[in-house]
Image 1 (cartoon, rainbow, N blue to C red):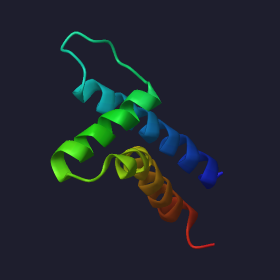
Image 2: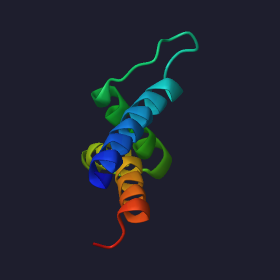
Image 3: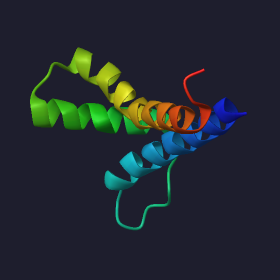
Length: 85
């Protein structure tokens, strides 16, 4: 049961991360956008511009950057309520 709750909260964090990344790169009056490809590309382009890494490495790192908050939240919730079973 704890794993199910942790998974649901992790999916909510994943969706919020996607919407947040798209919201940062959008125009002022743009609606909330849950486009995962646009979010990954947005993070990848920011990585290229801010760190100077090569383009081939930026897209996988951008996709990983979308998943990291969900993974962290999953293990925090599972560890806090599930114990070390």
